[in-house]
Length: 164
Image (cartoon, rainbow, N blue to C red; front, side):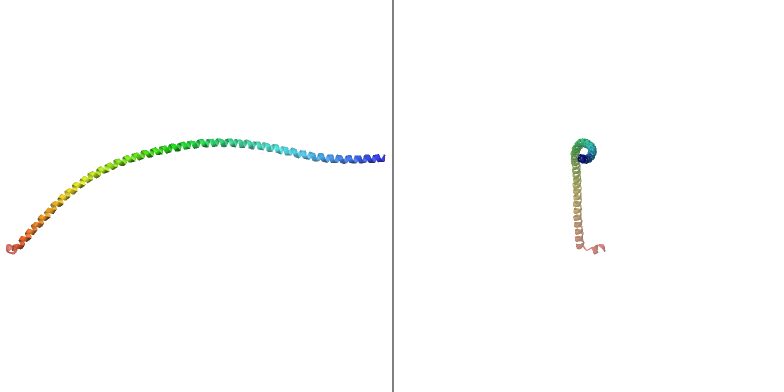
């Protein structure tokens, strides 16, 4: 029996050792399960965060699309207004240039008319002055002729006899 008892003691010791190893295994297994549960919680939180970020990104994409469409509409309006202003300024420029051309023609006609009148007046004054110069020139020659005659006569006559 002693041998049986020793054999039983050995078996009990082996069983105890196996139980301790099983306990260690389950302790480690519990630790792994806790860590896995914590990791699962963290992953669930991260998944929720990612869902929130994904929703925000989708909302931002939608807003960006709206802003793009609004900007395109505003750009089209600005382009239309710019084209309208260009047409308007082109029409204004054409109107001003035609008005300016007509005004220049009128002023040129007035200037030419005034120059024609002035030219006629100058021609009349010049002809009057030529007549006066011709008259003065005649008088000069008459006067010189008279002086020459008087000098000729005075040199031929003895003036001392006449005045004494």
